[in-house]
Image 1 (cartoon, rainbow, N blue to C red):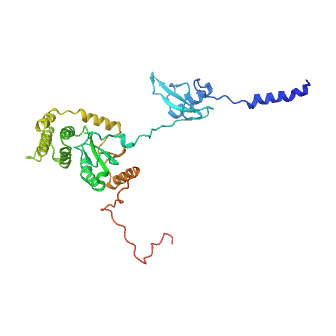
Image 2 (tube, one colour; image 1 turned 45 degrees about the vertical axis):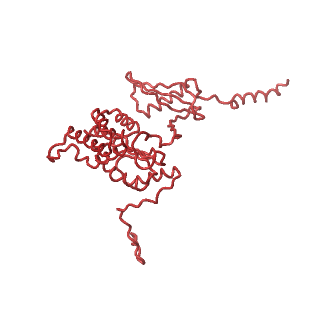
Image 3 (tube, helix red, strand yellow; image 1 turned 30 degrees about the vertical axis):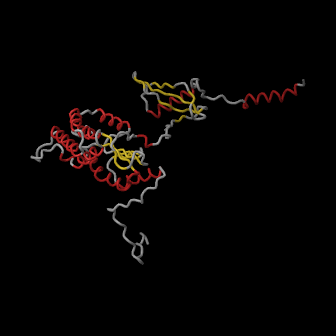
Amino acid sequence: MNPRNLAPLVLTAALASLGCHAQTPAVVSGQPLPLATARRVEVLLRQKANLPPDSTINVGVPTASELPGYESITVTFSNEGQTSHPIHFLISADGKTMAQFNKFDISADPRSLVSAEGRPSRGGPLTAPVLIVGFDDLECPYCARLHESIFPAITQRYGDKVHIVYKDFPLEQHPWAMHAAVDVNCLATQSPKAYWDMVDYVHGHSSDIGADPKDPKADKTLPRAAEQLDTIAREQATSQHLDATALDACLKKQDTATIEESKKLGVKLGVDSTPALFINGDKIDGAVPIGFIFNVIDDALRAQNVAPPPPYVDPNATPAPAATPGASSPAKPGK
């Protein structure tokens, strides 16, 4: 063969070796990061995390991720014999980009976040389009304010479109709140009405619980509060013709197990103060204006394809002054 005829073949092979082969990714699942890439990761993390100079960064072997073009790596930090929890990152196949992202499952109905099963209710049935779960402390003045002003207005405005329940969250700084929670739940086992009647009464008279009716200036005491709460529960049982013997046994036992479970659920859901409301899973903390709560309920109804009532108008709002016909507008500065 003429050597001149070989030249194009040699040139073609040379070009192919230079640029026509697919490049091997810098990051491959199941293989350790190339040293240069691992070094870049370490330098970046030291800068971002402001780590002590003698700390050690351990970068794991890449694994497959759900994001195309990226692999998953796990990093731990070690210092003075202590090792951090694994921290997850994404790294691009070319080793040029690191990322972090959070993945959230929104497939479940937020309403199912807090169950209302087994709790005395007000408003509509359990199948009502809006579920309102309140974490309540019977000694909490803010809870009393919310209970007295908000919930009657909610049931009046929405009727059977809302299903309202309370869960217990007695705070440790409130001495008799736990005893009150146990007593109202003793009633709940026999009569939802008796439960709500006592909740209404205690929230309406919480400032009197523990006081000496014969000496208003005397300090409030926990034994006196417990005695008064038990008396209120017994009066409810009598008015509702409940089993007094069963109630007395429950009051005497003061079993706090279900209350503690309710508190654990609240903590898990991020409750750290009262009142806390969950409206179809949407968490609202503290005593907020009634118009705000109505807006949240209206949005929840729309999400269930249920038309809300007409827009709420605050009766205490100051109406805007009516415009005077022919009046000129105020002159702008500089005019």
